[in-house]
Length: 168
Image (cartoon, rainbow, N blue to C red; front, top):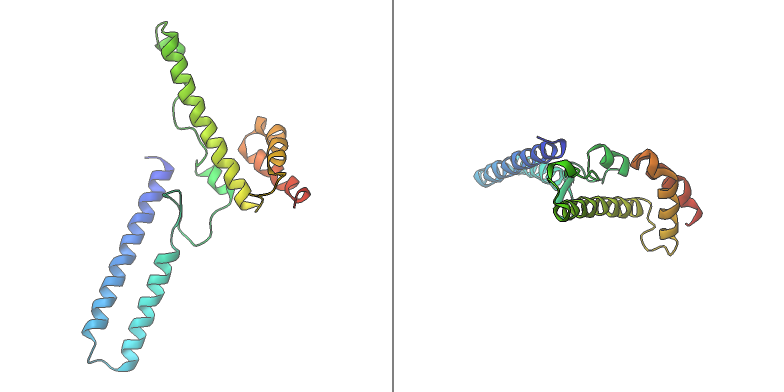
């Protein structure tokens, strides 16, 4: 299983565990009608703490679970977790046996996914540095990509971070 699937499964399990804790405490509160005011208040405080932790446990972006806390991770962390990685295999021309149309279609699909990953990366960089609606964001992206893409997305993000102050 991939890192992302493992992370998502861990988040789901933790979230379900917290939901069961909340239900259990709700039942305790309901059954404590005869309990003292202090005991009920302590139980309600525990319930609020668990509920707040469960609410802040995950961040959702485009329907995908990203992280297990209230703060969105940095682009560098998302690079490490493979958010911008093209998961499809690069097409092998020798396995197609001379059918160039099929090979061309497979290449197109591969590069469409690669472009989608690049656009997602760019969007996340713009959000992280709060330049989404800046008129010079395109120029910033072009310069960062030009200077850094040969060394990978880490370098693009680093150059982007270095240059972003020029357009703010």
